[in-house]
Image (cartoon, rainbow, N blue to C red; front, side, top):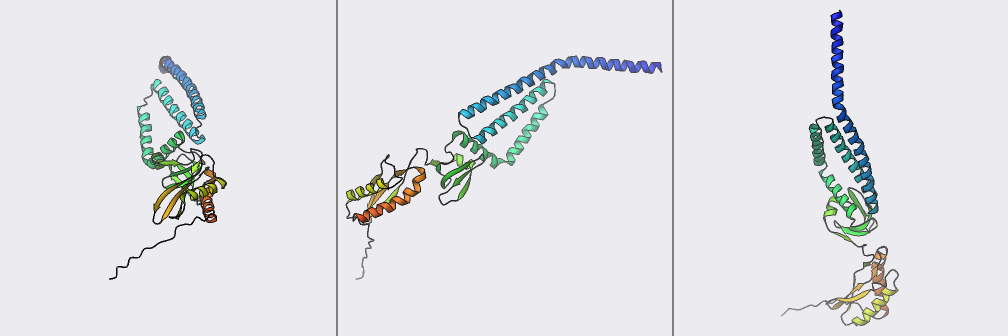
Length: 279
């Protein structure tokens, strides 16, 4: 009985000694890992604030700013955890391979969505247009009402809401009619071939300058666009702001037509030439 007790005491003593030696050997690693963890968390927080300040100064979109900050913090925290685990002697190879495999699987499953996401990031960073701009892209013309991470919403002049994926939108031609602050309205009105072009130009300019919404600077223009088919086609080009575009587009045509009528400027008469080849 005494012999059994002595053996148990020896086992406990050996275990305690082994545990003590292991703890003393492991302590520097643990302390170093804790220090690295605390410093890493502090640096991640500091860098997050600096990035947020930078994006605020650059006036990044709020949704993009929130996503990028979250993505940065998650990525940095994962790298910090892997680093701390490696310092503690934990094999991180399998863990890193698991994360890489999960990333590849998610990327393959969300191939189209990731393309739209990348396009949304590009649009929100470089800002080829903003909400409220009149744009033409992907065979759609209208006013941008919403810019998301994956899609951009455009309201067309006939009040149709078009949702355009950001992937193809960011990689194709975008025409922004709002950037310069004003738009040129391109109209064409024909007059009879025997009419005085200078008089017609004077009357058209006067009508445009009196029309509400037409800008004085740049000044409206009238030029001969084409002389053919027994008529002279005039290019009528007033300038206006985006909000007045459609009012000017339709209103100026009517105003110039009425001004021509009031000043005796006649429009073209349809002419048909019939050649009789009967012997």
